[in-house]
Length: 186
Image (cartoon, rainbow, N blue to C red):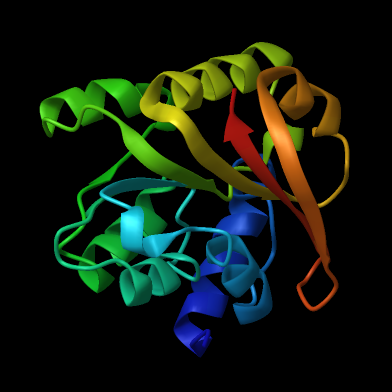
């Protein structure tokens, strides 16, 4: 459940840099639940969340991940990153998702079972999108999951070129409504 403080921080950061933050509000619990629902938690050993924001999805990851699961967070916005580090001190949190595989190596993590993303791909250049998706592909184990949400179907073709799209779920109870892409590494 979003706190008033989280909502205020998110809105403040959005209006300060809307292209980087991507949304005026944190993900709803309905969106967060849909993001973690496809994950086979009993088999997960390592997971990354890109664009953690204030932790709306992170809280669901924490709820499902056992103590043996390595969780890596990425959040570009400094104030939100500081907030999430205080809320989830057990999870390392880094600045730039383009350094995903580098950070994995530093943590001695060889592969990820799943990458969950709240990154606003629509706001990024094509070259930035490609670089981020390449990092995800390199990080995932064979058959690993990439789950991301977007506010349109604009990323469908690029995701289909990179992954096997297993499902696209529409989540109307979010501001704004969102599409959740469930993708598997080819």
